[in-house]
Length: 494
Ligand code: ADP
Image (cartoon, rainbow, N blue to C red; front, side, top):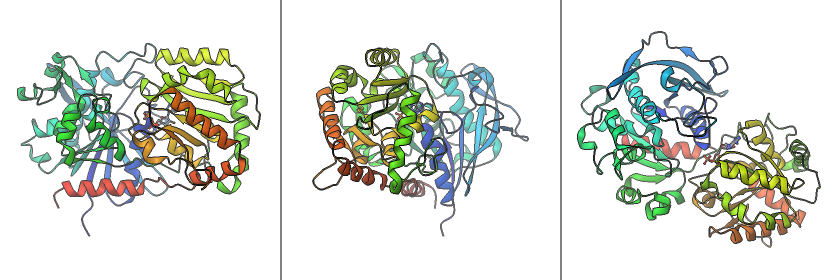
């Protein structure tokens, strides 16, 4: 039997502590599965001011004294709180790195009201990255692998290859860096480089600088021992075009032998309509007819009339350019002419808030919106909608379309990244497939896919088969967790 590995999983978002998107779902679920498969995995995230001490069951680490973390000329004291993520089978240790000046405020990356990036994000996340490595030494817990996620953790691989290169504590530690989104790179003005404390040779385009700026994501991509991303298709896309690679495609192409795609899984203890505690009416594939009760409650909640012949299209999303809302804006009238209702849950860019506010004024019986972040309503939309629309410009993996499958809520998606890897086009004659896809990023293509979906809806027997096909799919974490473990194993000293 090979020995169990020690893995530190670091992320800026971890469900149930802090979430803006899918990264939190992954960071909350994957470590539990890896633990279940017999490895010692611990999780670390910043202790944001929005995390409620009592609700999140935070405890002080008794033996851990505050330590000073250098951030350029300054230093900030770090302390650590402890908590757990748990399911009936396992408990995973969570550490929350605390400094109230840098993290003791609401909001993860942006000011909750102005929606502007915090001006000191460079210092905040430099502190987080450096703090992780200093705190681990104080804890005396030596990881075989540090699994980094997205730009907020990008400096850790760079530190290990430079400042900590000869540190005996980290002699055997290897890094895996998972890309959840290439477009968020953590770029800061060049002067922020000095805060990192990295050696001068890193102050170059061959190091952690891109286009003259400090780039956290690039630091991770250059220095991590292995790179992964969250679907196979996205792994190909990001190294083959500027649009997907966001300017770093040449670097990814250079590292293609170290880059693999491992599809995200789903935590079915949270996202399954047969056991979902957040929905009014539970159901499963054998009792699909009960789903409509959720539809009635959803429509009532958003002030829309119920008509069983009219399909409801759900959207749950960050309101960002990535997600394809300009396509919806282009053909909103044509969409409504298909005789559908649209429900939208999301927050983000103001232009999309405006778009949906205007849309619901224009079509008060067809379009219902909640421009908030609301976990419970997200579950109700999955349960109460007939279709789920994700016309993303790009999509590293996408989770909501996979949740939708289990809820019998038929996905209509653009065939990109993980959307393409997880959804199969429906063929009415053969009764095969799980949803509707379109390839070109054009509103007319999206409209055609929606048209096919509405047409299929017209044949309710066929539709039930389509729902069943999706509900039978299994995207649980175990297969993907095993792939990560295999990767860790290939890097760690035997
Ligand atoms: P991304 O990570 O790009 O935001 P994903 O589809 O991978 O997209 O994951 C999004 C996650 O965030 C899902 O769990 C989804 O339910 C959740 N989510 C997004 N917006 C909201 C919102 N406004 N309210 C509640 N949950 C949301």
